[in-house]
Image (cartoon, rainbow, N blue to C red):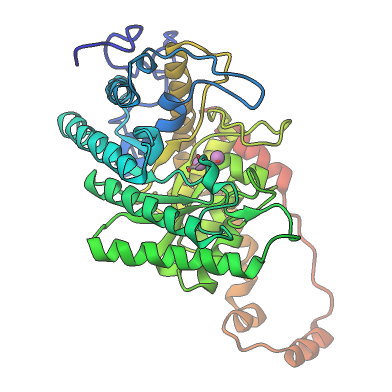
Length: 440
Ligand code: XLS
Ligand code: NI
Ligand code: NI
């Protein structure tokens, strides 16, 4: 690497432990440390989001970009893309993260025609492949940006114009090809503008059917080219449209079941999208997990006072601990990982802020992992929960679970057994126990 984009960090960020006062060191994330039967890096599988960390300039709906990134200074759009790629791989290595994620249009610029866009993408993918080979860094997932360009203003797969759907399908083909070429372990479909603002101009059923057909085409193409990565859908309830179709885990699972797509997709759960849906992060993870469909995570957090997708870095230990409990309980994320779909605030203008942001997020999840593992080892909540449902292991409860009970039997049984005794849910006691574990 000839040029340095991050001179403020000389070598690799190190683990220095909780007594370190070095703000550019990990206090909890110790990649090789074993937790249970895996190392921290195997459990957490951190990934960097190309769009936020490298492509974004810090613009918001009211303001122009505030960051001046050294890799954005090059001449043509393709020169800029090459420099950005060099900067990205320098950053991944210095941070010690093994995975990254991108949209087609973050990594390579759109051209004047579709053919030129594909050519740009292929050229950058060839370079990314070289970088991956020389560093061992891998692609967690790729995706297509089907929401920024004006042609997608009314949606991509759910657009009322079939011409737009066809364009989106062509773009997805190229993005899957790019992901396949780079050995991507997953491919993500976030709804983008797949949703609606008013039913005065929208045929709800038609749009959902289009969406399902679109996803089936992707499944067919995946088989055709032998792409072995996992397809993921990322639920989000609103923004940009008022009603996004993949609202939350439960809605998305129902959609997959209805359209015979259940075998081909898992979910990518984003913390900020969970809160936008009026759920906790843990709820969304758990709903996906019990269906066997928790595939990957967009690790960020929202600002509960604001109510839009602020994409902040995760710092809340309560939330990372509860998330890691769900993840550990299902035996890990498999081919998924924890992707920092997060950006520093637009006032954090220096490149060193990117390190502070990611170090904080990685430490917050490493700490959540340690705490969650300890909770599981001690079995404290598990024991409480299984004891709480113990009446389903015998008698009437067992008959219910085995499908042998009925309303008539219930009537007879209640006549002789009368009122149930009442028991406390002990919520406050359990919350206190959880807070004790957070001391780790
Ligand atoms: C937007 C989504 C997006 C996806 C990738 O809110 O989080 O960033 O993760 O398209
Ligand atoms: Ni996301
Ligand atoms: Ni998001």
